[in-house]
Image (cartoon, rainbow, N blue to C red; front, side, top):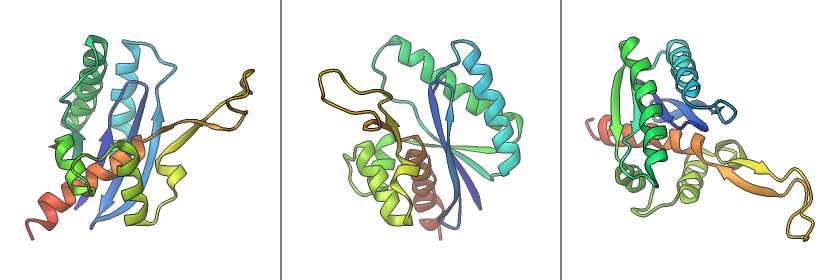
Length: 177
């Protein structure tokens, strides 16, 4: 059974495909330059294209449960809705994973995104920079704290998408066998 996990968002979205408990492919979609509400159409169109191309049996999403503020609610629920709508239009089964289930299946009940990425890297022998994509500083800090090319932050969306697939596999496929 082919799974597709999508860690949805309005700035970045991670995606992954998995079959028989092994990742097939994964990546990162960048929507950061598209403003609301146009980003919602972009998310729908790109998700529809990816689902049609990859042909998963199940689309696995993280159930939205906590938000920082009202803008986060609008953005995440909007992205979640567009991804869900694309799957519905293509007749693909949708499964939800709660963040707590994902963290339990990836090693620790209170795992942060870095821990989840490390678990996925070790479990599947993946390149950490490919699943936890580094965002680099583009110029030197005048105060000397960082230099051009230093890692500013990481985008954990691909590792989260892999973890979504893995959690579903462990709970519903392997667990049912």
